[in-house]
Image (cartoon, rainbow, N blue to C red; front, side, top):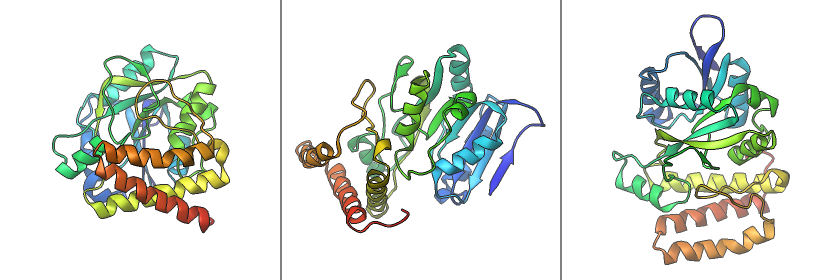
Length: 282
C-alpha cells in the first residue's frame, strides 16, 4: 500500500520515500512524521510504502511514483531532530551537480537509553563521526539519503533481489555512473538500535541469515562496508572474510566491547544456519 501526500499536480523539488512494514514501528514512525511536518523546506511530497518486507522493492515503488528532482529515502525508525535537514541536503545537491548521493551523520542521541548508547558506541557503523566538510564516504546510508532522481533511475534503482547489502550496491552503482557519494556536514539524524538484548540479537541473527543468502546466491553483489570515512577495499574474497572473523571476535573482547562480541556471535549463528540449511527466501 502506498500513501501519497503531496502538493498539487506538477513537479516538486523533493520526493521523500519511507518504506515501512506497519507504518508504526513501535511509535517511531508517528514521531518521525511530526518531525517531517516541522521541516523548514516545504517543496516536497511524501510517499510511504507500507507492507513490503523488501526495502529495495519498496523504495523502487515510491521512486516510480515520485515527481521530485531529488529523492530522499528515510528509514521509518529514525529521528530527524533538525528542522533544516531537508533544506541542507537540497542545497548541497543544487550547489554540487556532480554529487549523486548525499547522506547525513548518524549520531548518538542524548535521550537514548544507556544500553542503546553503548550499542551505538561499541558496534561499528551503528553511529558515525560527524564530518566538518563535504566528505567522500561509504557511510552515506538509506536511513537519511538524498539522491538525484535522474541518476537513481539511470542506474536501475534499488536491487530487489538481495535482502541485505542494498547500501553498498547502490553506492557502487552511482560511482560507476560517475557520481560522487558524500556525507554532508551539519546533517544529523538518529538511528537507534533496539532497546533490549533479545530484540538486538534477533536483529543480528536475521542479518546473518540475510548475509548468507546474499553470499550464496549473489556473491557478485557482496560489497564491504567500512566503519569509517575514507577509502577501503570494496571486495574481499569469501575465504578471507571467514578467516578474519575470529580475529574480529578477539578484537572485540580485547577492547572490552562485550555487546559487539555477543552480537557478532549471533550474526555467525544466523549465517551458519542459513548456509547449512538454506531457505528459498529470507
